[in-house]
Length: 165
Image 1: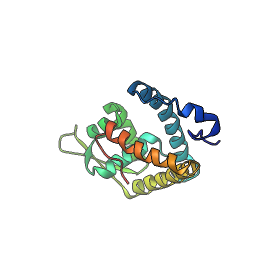
Image 2: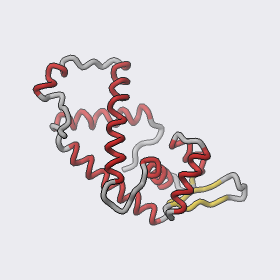
Image 3: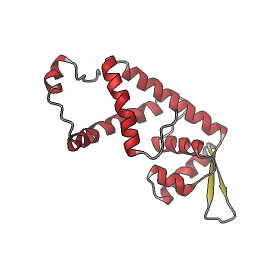
């Protein structure tokens, strides 16, 4: 399925009508971001050794960037409750992707990525990037340039942590 382009003949009339009020941009984000996330979720899990969920993938990335992080910091990053984050970590521990170490105070847990976790994350990331690359190649250069300019602005607006390379 080819993406609709702002420069396609059938949408060129619509291109002149694009509004940029914050309310309209918010509505567009609500329509667009879930579609993109569904595509990312599908790409991450298609054809390969890794079958990570998006939250697991995000957890591995956070743990990789913040070695020895706490369960609370991970839960905050993922926007999950502590029990939910604990269940997610337990699944990663059982798959031997993450090491959980309980400190002297049993309530404090540190998390570290194991080499198998690094490999699984790399596989999922590479497969997802390849799929996104194939999709984005269908856009015209000007459209890719506009998206390249917009995505960092969105990231910076909504994130306290830059995306990892």
